[in-house]
Length: 280
Image 1 (cartoon, one colour):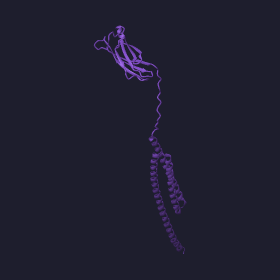
Image 2 (cartoon, rainbow, N blue to C red):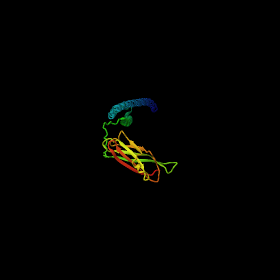
Image 3 (tube, rainbow, N blue to C red):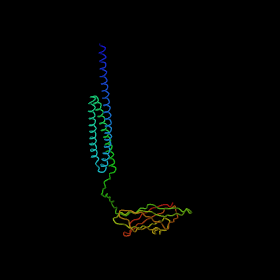
């Protein structure tokens, strides 16, 4: 009798176990479907978010470059990013509730932790991208900004006039004959005149050249002349030169005296300068 009862319950438990296995398998299938749908919707929403966020950022960057509103652009994009992240969290919450109905608190905690990680990653990633873009915009703005044009005319420092007209000998060009080493030449004298007076000065320069062995006549007989009819303006200087004629000299072991006299068209005699040289 006992064996018959065991056989009876054996069939009963077999049927119950079959139903339980069938139910577990059905729940696993539903879980896999929900899980698959969760990941598909998550990826779709993430792609959509990234695409829209990229478009928004590009538009805002263009607008900020054009209008110079970098700070405003940063706030607007930040608000829109928060809105998209909120949508993601709502969708995830919906999936959590859906899954918890079938699989209990353990699955909810697992999905909730994953959702928090995704949201944090998106926020961190987007914040870093936004800061980078904002920095690029600021650099581009600084590089393209034109410097302010100043209409101020720089002050010209006026030089104090000396009240004098000065002259100096800059250089005397000499050479010795290639065929006669006792014959030399004074070819040219270069000089500079500085006008320290308040009006334009029109110079007349004469050059004299002689030595102690020559006739005294050469001390008063000029060997060349320089004039500048346009005149030297007040506070400026002018360089000039005179080519001597005649220019040949003997007694090369004796120093030659070079004398320049300066006269003004209106002033008459002004000054004279001297220089002693050897012809070499």
